[in-house]
Image 1 (cartoon, rainbow, N blue to C red):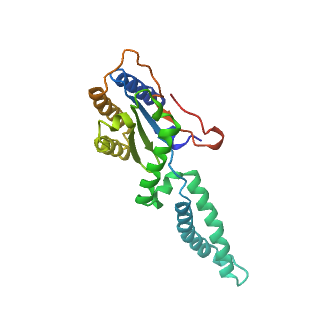
Image 2: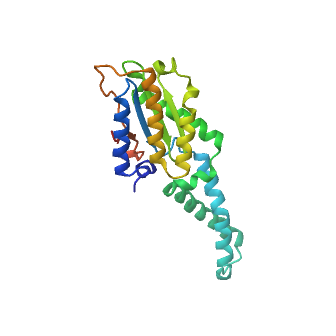
Image 3: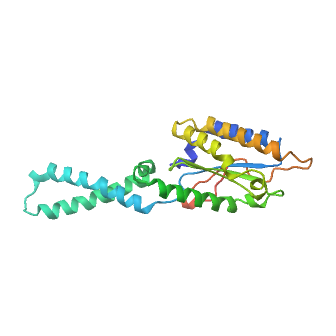
Length: 227
C-alpha cells in the first residue's frame, strides 16, 4: 500500500513540480527543494487516545448486541474482553488509515514536531552544504497538513524568516483544499522570484540538490526518494 507521501502527488504532478523547480533554479543561484513526508512523528499518545475512544462505543454496542447470547452471568468480564478486542481493532485501524489519527492530534504538538522534523531533514539532505549557503527547503507533512519553509544562512542574511509566511499560508491552504500541486507550483514561483532578485545565477551554476524528495517511510524502504 502506498504511503500518504507517495499518494500526495500523481506521477505527472511530480514531473511538473521538478520541471518548475528546474526552471526557477535556472534564474538564480539558490536551490529549492520541495520535500513530502507522510508524517513528522508517530504520535503514540494520539494513537492511544484514538484507540480508547474508538473502542469504548464499539465495545458497548457489541455487548448490548450479544447480551442475549450470554449463558453465564459474567457481563462485566465479557465487556472487559470486548473492550480490549475493540481496542486492538481501533489501534490497527489507526495504523492502516493514518488520516483518522488527525482527529486526535493537538495543534501545538504537531507544530512542534513538524518544525523539529523539517530542521532534521534540512541537515540530513545537505541543504546546509550548498556552495553559497542558498538552499531552501519546502517541507510538507501530509498527516498534519502543515508546511515549513527553511532557508540556509546565506538566504537568512538577506531575507527575514517571516518572508516565507505568505508562501507557507498559501501552500497550507491549498493542501487543505486538496489542490496541493497547484499550490506548490505557486510557492515555487514565489520563492524563486525572491531568490532571483537577491541571488542571481552564476555562470558555473550546477544543480546541487534534489528537485523533489518524497520520503517513503516504510521501514524496509526508508531511503526511497524521487529526484
